[in-house]
Length: 334
Image (cartoon, rainbow, N blue to C red; front, side, top):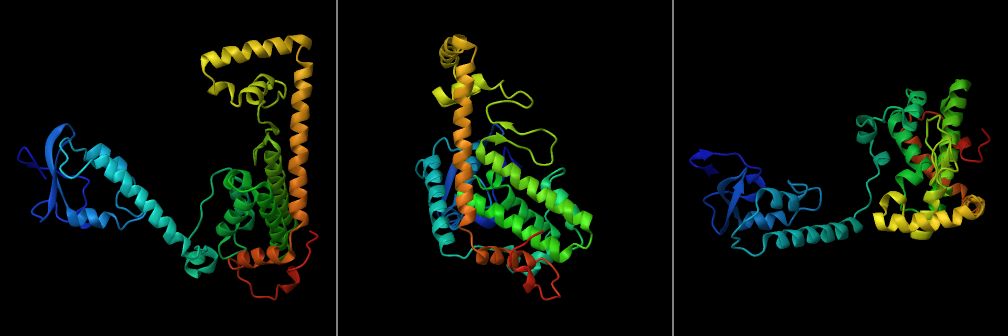
């Protein structure tokens, strides 16, 4: 591209878009790049090629953003550019979704090149890091194993779109798989106990989150109700009122809504200094806890050994298995 006689580099990759100059059937746009007038030509062949890419595969990950920020035409000779690009992206997503339905999901545990060549790096201070430090050296790829256990144990964080029952089954499966791994690969009883303590604590915290608590893994902060704050369970009563009667947190309210809610809250609270309100919220929370606990209990009660064993076999692919481990595939009592 030439701007005032000086060649400029742009974000256009001619490998994907065809030649930017001298092409047949090109579309010219008058644009500004860094506030300097310039001419950009994109071949029709290049524009057609762009339609072949799915989300994440295109050379510009966000084609719409690229178009708006870099190649916004003032006088567009080939239709409304932004609307066209948005439609192209919608087409990309729809075509990709249909394509993915027809393809089997990629499972890294089925590929030796992934097990032998890919290392997952856990966040500092995370559950996965603590598990990795205890499992490291006992598997071909300990990082893959702890990453998978972390996903299953922390379903409320990593699998929020699943049902309570689905997360419960994954969580329980992870605990049983961890028990089997400890029995087969840990020689040091202290390390084995430490590993299972972490797993069980993570599972317990995830269940608390299911019930409406804020619970942190690898933290000294005690769990607290989602509308309260650490160390002061009654502090959140004002926010609990807002959530129940207005469906939103106080910080998300407009000034007018907040004033209306505050007046109503003060009237209710002053009747008996908040005793009735607190009892009401305590009952609502307890009812929800029981409802969640019942769902979890029913889900675990309906689990089959076969599904747990399939999950364990999958994890064992990341280990160096030289002995007959058929004895593992039963009820664990660690």
